[in-house]
Length: 319
Image 1 (tube, helix red, strand yellow):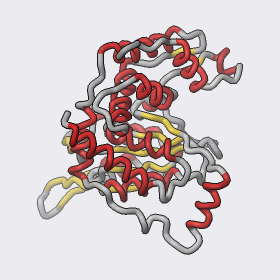
Image 2 (cartoon, one colour):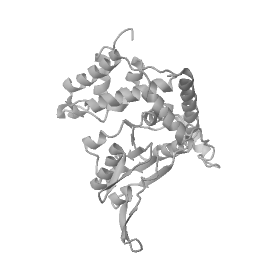
Image 3 (cartoon, one colour):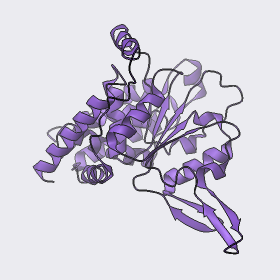
Image 4 (cartoon, helix red, strand yellow):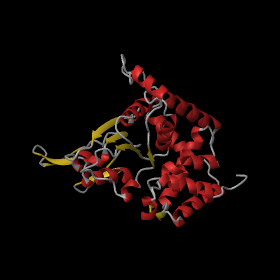
């Protein structure tokens, strides 16, 4: 990869993070991880309590990336046809006409509170995430490129909600938690919303063509065989752990490699190192493992097990 390309992506991502940071204050790591996921062409699940900025993060990213952005509030009455579209009979043409759904002309979709909609609607959206296309009445319609979903869910007031099954959780490249801001950041957030629209100052840094070029550059980042072996060792350790009922799948290993490539590029390199893998491992894999009943009863968290695996598996040397 040309050095100029690496520098261009590095400077662009730095500028995007700075713009989004005008709204999401004190959460640089979360902004960085979401941007890595977009470079890797993956979807993001923001799992957190209400009011910490999940929606604001998606809106700010859409503005700074120059992508076609849309939002759907997931409620029990949202139907699959609202997502993928439907056919209506056209009397003039004496034929059915396809009416696009909310995802058909969207590059970046915010699916707010995805756990509050029905299983059928979740499945319609998640199929589109995997296949990048929708099929209605036997006719397939391609989705825009790129097509990225940022979905949110929270565990507060979860009565009557439909939690995502494990197989569908696997569609998301990362699961992230924003968390509450520290005192200084919260003061800045409050003051910044007294007299001005926080989104008004966000500049468009790149456009659709630039985002696609950055995604292509991410694929060209080099990851050497010893580091691929390191990812495999981590995955195998998750499968053999006494705390896990289900470990990281090969799809999870691939996701770690793609996310690590994005991390390297955002740090101004065209090659992956050990720190890239360690930095993204827990965020990519925390929703891909299932703990044993004994581990859950002991209060063990998925992230605790993954951090133990990182400590226990030796990385390759001199790579």
